[in-house]
Length: 194
Image (tube, rainbow, N blue to C red; front, side, top):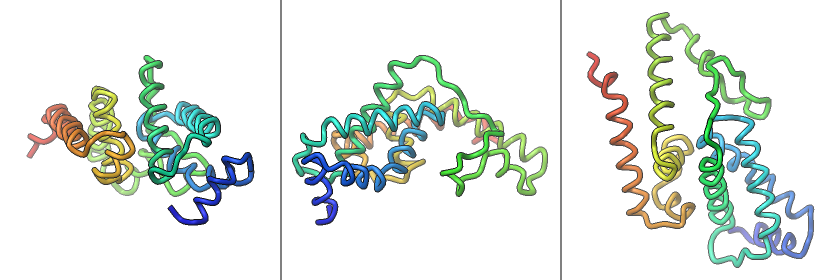
């Protein structure tokens, strides 16, 4: 944690709204990215984002500098994601034709990616594979899904995920191993193709 971030946290703990807003600004895309990777729905991800920063606002005085601020924040994010998922029974799937949000301008919709010169058969196969992957991810337990998305969609290392989830690296590796095995079994039909 930098000295500047340390000072922002201390100021936020004393009620400085500008300092708190700066902390939000530094991490808002990360929180939204984790939420979206886990939920796969823009509106639900935004709800999670709001809940996370509401909890951070209410709990900032409880931050004791025992870990990085980002670790504490991402732990709250993962807890909110897990709670949100357990409370919400039905999840909307993202359409292949959904356009990215304005703040996600560097991302492109799946249908746009598929239209970059791919043959029709290839598009159909890619579409089928993508749907099968999404379906497989939805069948994972919440912890397996979280580890899988943090590792493969967000690019976090095992050690970082363990810190975020407040568990051992061995537990993370176990979740990841089981999730990977389940995904392999789920995608076996595509892996057997010549």
